Image (tube, rainbow, N blue to C red; front, side, top):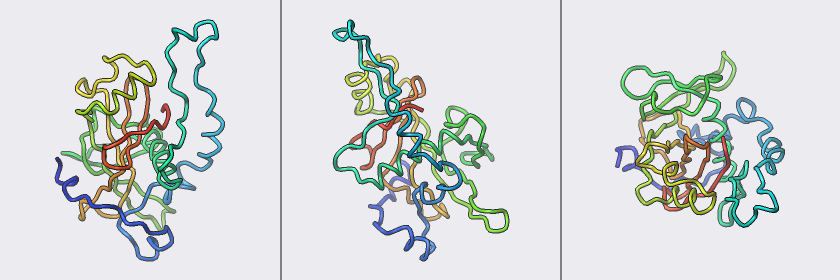
Length: 220
């Protein structure tokens, strides 16, 4: 368990306006990037909802189900949390990392996205706002996700017919990324929400309870 995870506590339920007024140290990515990174995400999600490949009618008995382009919000997950996870996935897909010695560094757009083997786990920074009034945010990239309980692998294999070779946390296929961003790393608080991506097929899963359960978000 990392030092940051050891300090995790249940995240506070406060409105965006109250967080901003209080200059809170934590914010969910969507609150910061509505006009920066993912404007129109809802339209994009709807436009691709039915894009997943379909099995031919004659092969319905043998054709494995394909993962849809975007997942369906499950019961028990709030609109706020689901949108936060979806937007975090889009955020990470749009950003690559630049190292600054050791672990951590900063994020840049338009560089391929989805930090992987060349990015060490740690805190990465980025800025929002105009040049004369910018805010620096920090978000944690967790590196390889081992999936020791096979929670994600079971989704992959049983729901979408992914082979055990491609659904193997020990094989290095999975990477984990935080959903919450912060204005400081001093508190060491990361929150309980994460997203996990299979680098072989682009399947992305969200956990809202610190790896206890996972829900399919879509393909990126």
